[in-house]
Length: 325
Image 1 (cartoon, helix red, strand yellow):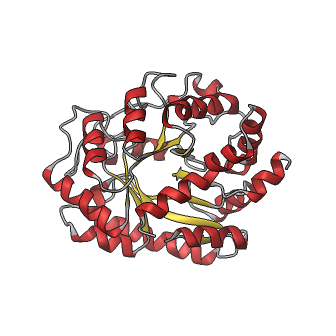
Image 2 (cartoon, helix red, strand yellow; image 1 turned 180 degrees about the vertical axis):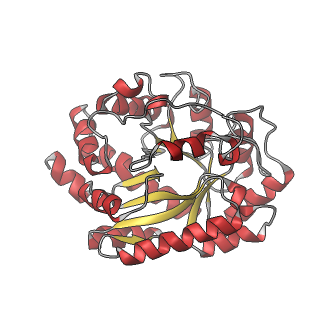
Image 3 (spheres, helix red, strand yellow; image 1 turned 135 degrees about the vertical axis):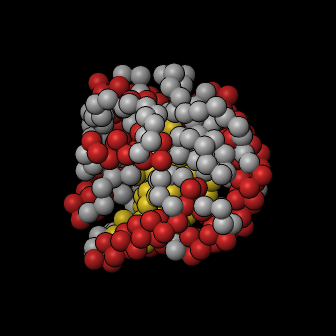
């Protein structure tokens, strides 16, 4: 198969997109041959604001049903592939929307939420993010993990502190994920994961989605798609070919105000970090350029079988496990 044919034939899943929701994005997802994506509907929002976000997102999906469809099961992912649409998985980047109510976990599962990150950069009722002193998983956090396991929501640890992450990995009866991370072996950064952390999650049945977010890459905004491929290979050498996938962290369509919201605690309080200029790696600057990644991985000597796994098959397998299928 040619790279284009392989891409068109493969299930392609992005484990994290936080781009601006609109028809233009959905059109680009189709151009990129994206089968499904974990799309963020909550970061700093509480329960009510998150429900509002899901309601607005569901309306947008309905209005653009020629391009996208909701995903609640891996059968929906395969259906999206069959229909030539992109499946949308609702995901949180913070468990803050659960507030202090264990019952909200199941409520959000029923609304279509499939992946939830335990903390976003800072402390919440569950545990600690990666930008402050890590107090580990709270007692309430343990209950949240158990409830997420029960209803079938995947625990995400991408922005979570090291100690809290380790305790979630040990606590969870289902596979957990770093849905969008990079190795600190290529660049030291609070958001990047050490070789030991990557090995630990894989050794406990977990999963790693590799991001291409420029501030976390060694060459920053001068990075290319080959630098991204190198990061994927670095991680795969640690976790193996079955525990790796894609989690780009595409922020397509957002302006500076959105990044200000992301980089301040609770969206408004103290500044946590400053990303500086953000330009995605040359060759995969937009979602529509996804086919270039399949081509790059093939050019770098990976077999069709392994490329299919990286591009999406591994995600399907691990999601089926977590979602109880």
